Picture 1: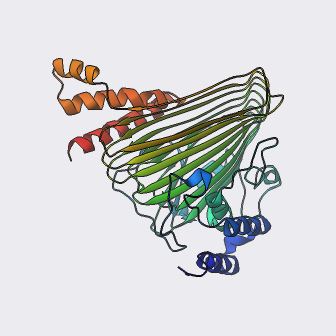
Picture 2: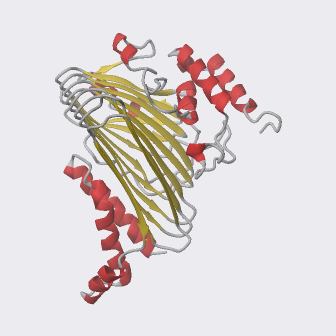
Picture 3: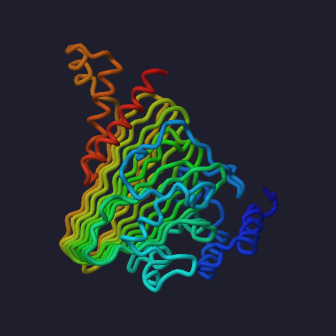
Length: 421
């Protein structure tokens, strides 16, 4: 990396991308603006408020992705599967044609409805907020995404099965989702795989629509950055759940705007770490309408020298009365070297609201462990049962019970792997 200008290699990579990659034509101006923001910000350091717990070292444009052999959590889910290998869709393994029969998929030329989605959420300032947060890796993703999915679920359409975005390959790819869920429509999106250095998503959920999102980050061995922006309309519902395990560095950012009255939103995660894992979940929820509810539920189980970071903010705009904002982050430390950092925030400008946040850190309950051992469990079995019960509060935020069970099975597998070490 250039010792004088550490951003020089990134500029060279971006210039080469815009000159040589056919994907660069989509949203060319938005890409250029996003890269300018990324270049001006630079790679984040501990000196920046929202990165003080999460150092980013040695990241370069040619950074490769590394996968762990843990299996695809959603491998046998009946879904419209889109497989991306080294940043490009593999049509021979994807259900692109079948999905295009039930929803509107935009090609490289875009589509008229994309004007209400593409870059409208990512580049939007939060009106009335004390300060605006810079998100450099979201900008990097927008500047250099090579492929992804731009899709509209028509008004009133309930998608018959989930869309599964599967990321494979070793290149440090950048992949993107642009999605409009029409009025009264419903859809579920699943994400899995280590083959993306960054992912970005902009989701507009129109009035009375429902959108569910599940992400399995159990195969990421090295690094992954994600950014998800959601705009929730009146009487609409948004739910996002992520299960993370054992990556060297994961940073997930979720930015949700409650834009219509009587909307509801939930952002939840289960985090499991061994060895030198570092997993950062940063959430910003902006309440800009009345009678809305938001929930943040984050549960971390940490062993070895692993670290988990939770940064969650609830912003309530003036006039957003009857807001109900709930935030909880809890961690169980299975070793003395494990570390949990929590930074909950409330910024409220309305006077008729119910907002709360809580954070706890501790070891497993020794009395509960003793009780289970007195009933014939080994120490490891007792720990596994207690961990499963602890994480389950986050898993219960998932709307689909069958997908809840998949996350529970993955949690059990992680505890079994820990027991076998």
